[in-house]
Image (cartoon, rainbow, N blue to C red):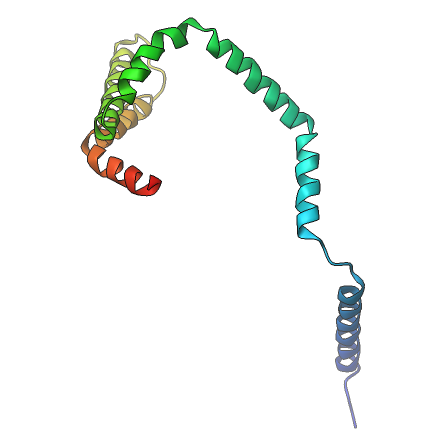
Length: 148
């Protein structure tokens, strides 16, 4: 029988690879997922990134609790909290559209333009505000269904 040598050597390599894979899977210890998750959580909690994030959050929280801006905005936030969700969404959409319109007008009045598409961001915000205004009822209904 005239067999090609590469065919038999390929079969030997495939058999060896399969046997090696089988032996590795049988001897590899099973991973305890809950212990692994707990170890990851412990490492994450002790990481410098999380410590820095907590320090930043605490510092920002202290600064915000003592800021004049918060004292100024608190009555507005309380008034908005008493509004119907549809009215709140409409108010946010209106504020976005007005603020973006003012920004666009100020850009137009600038003696030196910022760039060729500097109008794009304010215009997108105007459109987004108008979409919020127009779709306030649908968005409020979606939010009510999502939370219930």
